[in-house]
Each structure stands twice: as structure tokens, then as C-alpha cells.
Length: 595
Image: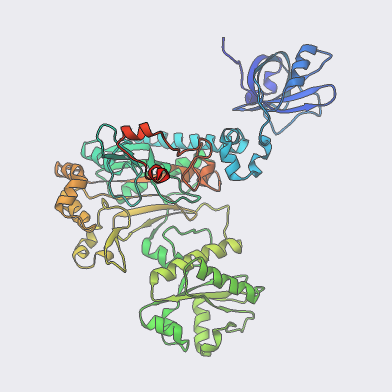
């Protein structure tokens, strides 16, 4: 005989008269001085229980002892609630149960905070008592949405003939951009495994092995500083395909995203627009632009190069950059607000300054501390180029570093989009960022780093640039961005041994070093590797966005905090000396404490 016959949240008026056996938590207890009402909760929802001392005194005595979060089991008959007492917000709101049997399965000591108040509690408190936080309606809803989204992705890939294949968690350390988590080997003293930052190399090896369509809901690990959208351990939907080009992967991913969004009640139109990396930086100052509002960046360099404002003219003439944004609804701003925005750009965004021109009237050519340095015709040109109207202001950033100008304006654009409520929160804006640079050059050292990773193939149209100006060569890489957040990215890979060796050479590796670090991959490429490519989508981040959550911690069952620790379990923790000895490890901290 089953432990229970029905679930609380599934009962309705259609079940009236049925005998049921239910189990769950006491969600709410109301004593009306005679009748006692209990809302019994399980994973499907709630149903009302009622006890009348005149009907069943023994049951009523048990009800008097019940407290929130007691775990109970009941048997009884479903009946309709009296007229006027129904709860239309619940599926079970038209019925109630007067139990004939009640069993207390477990008691609950006094909670540190009532569950209904957990949403308002400090996050560190919620994470310390995560098992209780997970009982709240919000967290239950988030994790159920995560399951539903994940299952929709698996269903799409399974129906598209992909194979789900697991790859190792204990692997070797390879340079992939972030710091590795290391695991000491007990059986090979002095050697270490690394937890995978991604299954990148293994999924390429699977392509070489002839598995043409692979996916994995993969656990990944990166020892890096945390923020709202990062965790030291995270989950990604990892995908790789053979005999494909960029369009094939983008088309497959769009279908996957359409199904994932639909599982969360959102519709997206296909195909998704594409934007070059160059245009994204030029227009929005970001490689993950939020397209739910305007405020595109405007290049004023040509006007400024011959203007009477000498500081801007000098920067423009030396091939620097003078750019700005035209911002509406600033007519009521005080001078203090303009100054505060300048301080934000300097102190928080790294700018050397911020200049502005504001327009208070239709015939106004601009009022600001810098307006006096321009001729009337120059002010007219500036206003016309920006398309400025009454009530608008233009904010300028100028510097020899193009990167700095675009980055500062990109951050300023987002800040003002939120401050002035220009962002349409009801929009879902997806965009592919394509034509990424293959490499970026450190201006101080002159060394190269890969914008994606060293296994990314160069665009064949730019392969000749690798010997002339490598930083100008484009990669066959692509990122998918949703409302200003990167959901994932990928690339076509180097599938020939020589191409991969050349790529590693940009990291300063000679043939011997390349063989030492990546010999297994190079050997595989030499054994007849097919053209292949793939993408990795951040599952945590996707769920965060689709559930309108503020951080990844709201969609991960047991997340870490900014210090990469777990407030619930106390991890990481110290281990005893014997464990360290078996691993041939000595703790520097322990040695210092002894001395």
C-alpha cells in the first residue's frame, strides 16, 4: 500500500467525497478558538485541514500540538468548503479535509525565522539556513523551473541525434584562462589533478573519435573571484558537432534556445539577429550589449580634430577617440548631478574625466563648462550629429585609448539606462556577437592572448594576417547575448595539427612545450580529425535570466558565497595532519602557527 494516495496541491472539487491519505509539512496553523485550521504543504502545493473538537476530540488534541514545519500524515475524506470560505488562488481552494487519523512523523524545533520572512532576510542568513530557504515558494519555483528548462534542452538535443557523454572530472591542468582547482594525487606523490574548467579538450577528442554529435550537462570549476553571475563550480550545456560551419551551430543553438525559453513561458523569434564584435564595441561599448534601449555611442572625433577645444582636438589629431552619448530627460538635472556622474566615471569606470553639453531650449546650442571653447558652427555640428533635442544632454569621453573610451561609455550607457528607466523590462532581446578578434595584444608587454581560447580557428579570410598583424585576424567564434548578459559562446576549432601548433605558438609555446601540455590533443589531430566546432551555454545563467532572479545563487541549490565558501556546510575546511601526510602535502599555515 502506498505511503500516501494523493498530493496536496492536486486535489480539487472533482475529488469531493474521495478518501485520501496525505503527508507533508504544516505550513500554517490557525486556531479560531474552536476550530483549528491547518494548511498542509507538499511539493505540489497546499490543502486545508480542519479539526472540530465536537466531531473528533482526539484529532483536535493532536492539532493543538502542531506547529509550523511539523511533518504529519493524515487520512480523511474530502468535502466541499462552506460557501464564502473558498480560496480561488489554490487549486485545492474549494475543498478541505476533516482527518479521521493524524500521525506526527517528525517535530520541528523553533525556526530561526518564519519561512514567510525568509525572502526579506539577509542573503548570508538564508544561505546558512539553506535547507529552510529551499522550502520557500520562491526557491521551490526556481529549482522546478531549472529542472524544466534542463529537461527541455535534453529533449531537444536527444531528438536531434546528439549523444550525452560524460567526460572526466579529474584531469590535467591546462591553460584555459582561469585558475585551476587542483587535487593532489595520493598514489603519485607530488602530482596533481585539475578539476575541469570545461570539457573543451575531451569533447574535441570525442569528435576525433567519430562521435559526431555530443552534449553534456557538465560541471565546471574555475578558481576566480566571484560576483552575482559567477560561481566557482557551475553547470554548462556543452555541445560539439563534426562537419559543421558557424551557421550550422548557430541554427542548432537557436532551436535549442527557442525550446528552453518556451519551457519558461517565453517566446522568441528566429532567426536571431547577428552583430559583429566591432559594431558591438563601437555602438554600445560592450561585447554583450543590452539592446532593450537606445543610447548608441557617437563618434565625434572628426568634428573635434579641428575644433577650438584644444584638449579634445589634440586627442583626436593623435588618432585617439572622442565619443559620447546623447541622453534624454536631463532638463531637470542640477549641476551636482552632472558632477556626481563625472565622479562615477572617474572613480568607478576608470575615466580621466567626463564632459557634457546640455540643451534647455529649442534654439540652444548647448550650455556647459566646455561650450565656451567651441565656435557656434562647431556646436551646431555636434548637436546635429547627436540628434540632440530640448531636454537632452551629450556626455563626452576622450582618450588616446580607444578601448578605455568605449568601455567607460558602455558602462555609463548601462548606468543611465537603469537610472532613467529607459530599459523596457518586458522585452527579450537576443543577439549573436560574431567576427571576434582571434587575439588581443597586451599594450605593455606585446604578448598575445586568445579572446576565446587557443583551440579556436582563425577565419580563413584572415589567415594571411597571422604573419603580418595577428591582432587584426578574426576568429570563427560567436557568443549569444540575452538582455546584456552572455548566455554562452563557442567557435569552430583547429582540426589540423599544424594549425593548432601555430595557435599555441602565440602563447609562447615551442613544439616541445606544446607536446608536453597538449600532446594527447595534437596526436589526435594528426590521426585524421574532422572539421568540428561547438558551443557552451551557461545553464545557471540561463535559468537566472528566465526566472528573473537577481543572482546565480537563487537558482543553484547549494551555492557558494563571494569567498568561494559554503555557509551551510562550512566548506572549505581544514583537514587533519594524517590526511595531508598521505597526500605528501604540508600546510604552510600550520607550519607558521607552530613557529
